[in-house]
Length: 385
Image (cartoon, rainbow, N blue to C red; front, side):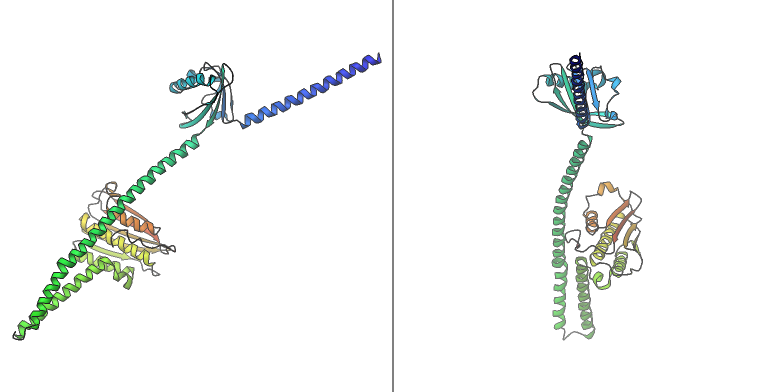
């Protein structure tokens, strides 16, 4: 009797031990499965070979195209848009007999936006396919942004090459114009001056009045040549800017423009508390020079205003006219004057904005820091000299 009881107790202990081992193994299996599911991509679907959804797993229910009750037990054609349903049906059939996963990318409209997904279809047995889905919207958007940026960079490079060619052509044209002025104008005036001096040297028999007239003519020709040389030199390099500073140079530029053309130019300014960086001063002078050139040549304006203000570390320049204006989108990137102004200002870390419309005049606004970063210099190839 005692032996029977001992055997019974032994059997119970063995049974309980095995049950504990089974429970522990089940616990480990459930934990492993939970870890695997947690490590899975965004979505997973078990689909029958004929296209019926059997089961699913979703890390976030909001990533589902439809609630589970609307697709479990349903055919793909009842859930997905027709083009995608046809594509998935073909790929499911191919995945059942394939040794490698079938990979396809597709897009779905969700929550008011287009989301992109990648699905890997793996055949499990003769009639079941597992679809492992990842949301690749961020990657697609990054690729699209990089593609757009690449196109923009190519377009910018092409514009820069085109601009470089036009700048070279403009420089050659300017050199040709200067050479023509030197040859056709100054050289002829110097030749006439030489003739006058020769006649003056042989004027011993001339009357006093005739001698005075010849001397006066020589003096006038000399002054005219000196004025031409001065104007030519000033176009090449604004000596007044370096000798007197920005404000006197701008004031003289406005006076000269008003005197030589039919456009009255007012100059208004704040006293600069410190002498500006030479590169910035040259930039502001050249922008004003180009803007006034455009006013005189293109706008038909009767009046223009140049304003120079200094507030804190910011210097602002405004050139405005009451002329015809223009459609900016038709001129942007085409006129060398506008391009050279923008390149000069941008090179020094400033901003240039142009406000204009047909019949509403034009306003050029420049803002820049009064203290320029070290190592910056005005690019010699940008704009007219």
